[in-house]
Length: 431
Image (cartoon, rainbow, N blue to C red):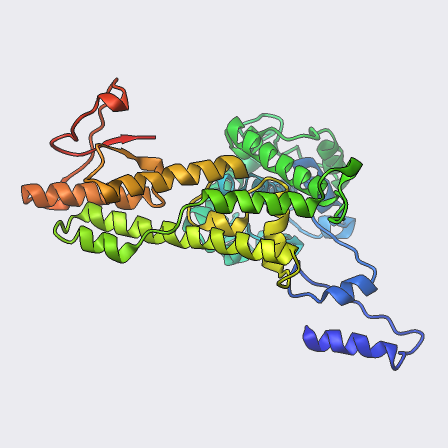
């Protein structure tokens, strides 16, 4: 890419032929030179949204000659529709993110076209429909060649096992989803299938993909966030002036950074903590040391970023891309992405900062005193490690194998202040 960028820059010194045109196609990439994008005319292409739109687009790519090419027309017409529906469902499941597929795969028209050619070839060659061969080659080879997650592979196989079966050919209007709206129409012309697709609903219910309605709520929330983020990015970026004589963006961000610096405590002295707890080599203390190490990294990161940001606003250091991202996040009252690597959080910046102080306070009390009477489970960066340490502590105390232990939970109706001692076995947790 850098070499291409230099070649394009050379056009200013030595103009190319008047008929010269450079066409470039690429998947979205951060490595693509911005200068080339700014010079050229940009076009994007992506599948439309919705089952109906995807079915229409795919059927518009099928010619009358290709549609009539297969000798086993009755089988081909129905199985082609099932294949088209299969491809459309896979594309649309991506909108549910991890609820649809664990990994967002880039299925494209080539996968569909190769599977279509394969379907015609096998139906013409075999008198009996070779279900196993078709399902394996389409699900495992053509589409499955992109799939790296075993659970996603099971999803593909489940769909194709449902769509490619004897009932799909013998049952009139064979239903393809939990909703009766989507079915394989009776045999007919290519236009008759297009007409049926045109009758399908514009907006898809989550049941069409075998999803719970909550999955659609999650998708709508994420889409709304994308819209709001786009609107934020459209806001004026002039940081020098404040509206109506108010403070400028730079002054506001600098004030926020100073407030965070004043609130965030200094990192723990891990060596002193380990020395103070050395007489009790408990698995729970190992968890304490690990949590302190992680939170120390976060505290140092926050303090360094805020200090550098203040210097950058004052013109004392160069504003890097990372500092610019932190600047925009603080201006929008959001937690910078670099600060969210320690533990996930959906809180806005102010609430996140207060939450961080409470998390650090839990560790500080543990460091100064003995084991807490009640542990705030969600205050740990890695709660699973804490739960494993509880099992290890119990196993060592009772001299039994850890794999013979399991958790039992009891809900107690007590205020935290009423708990004076930890339980004899296990721990009290909240959160």
